[in-house]
Image 1: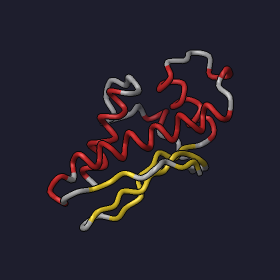
Image 2: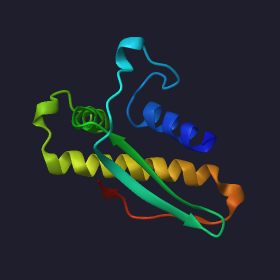
Image 3: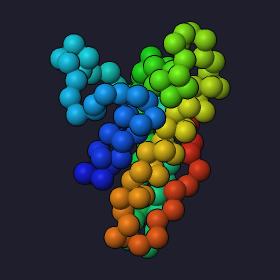
Length: 114
């Protein structure tokens, strides 16, 4: 899990432009069950896991806007949001793969949208 969290922090800071993913203000931490997002499968001789970025509809729209540098989130179509969420999952999977170098060769599969 430490590798996943480190990769997620890198993704948040490098791809989404967040200052720090280590803490959030209390008003932002309201629980919303994720309903959609991107998912990839990592596999190797010693590794088999799914890694993804899942969020609410509004969260996916927000994350997609951050990734694409869009300020007007209403301007994002459903296919654009699906593609952005798959790209985030693929980037996250790549970050986890880099950290699993001790596990041998690990491949990242094609992203899919849930």
